[in-house]
Image (cartoon, rainbow, N blue to C red):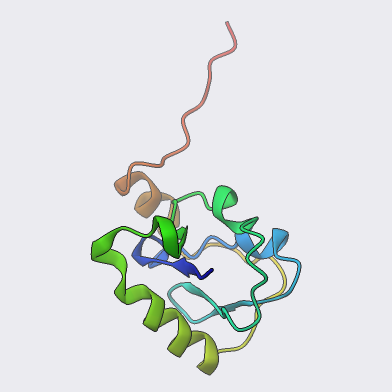
Amino acid sequence: MTIVVTDNCRGCRFTDCVTVCPVACIHADDDMVYIDNGVCIDCMACIPVCPVQAIFSADELPGDQQHWIQINAERAAALPVIDAKQDPLPGAEERRAELGYAVTSVSQD
């Protein structure tokens, strides 16, 4: 199976996925992360922890996002592995809200 990071990661680069990856298959540039499927063991631990729902298994990847399979393969091969959580990019929370995944606080009445 192939695990794919899509456009929702762009501009936020939350790295929660790195904290659960057992094999260090996540690479990053200045804008987002990518998965090296040659190293990935398809555990899918990264999928539910992504705060902007940017990670999919290829089986669940929307049709208009199929091009991200190739992008992940190319970019992961050219970038360094990240193996520790990093701060999200400036404006990440705004991007998260724009995508509809803003954290809402629960009142304690």
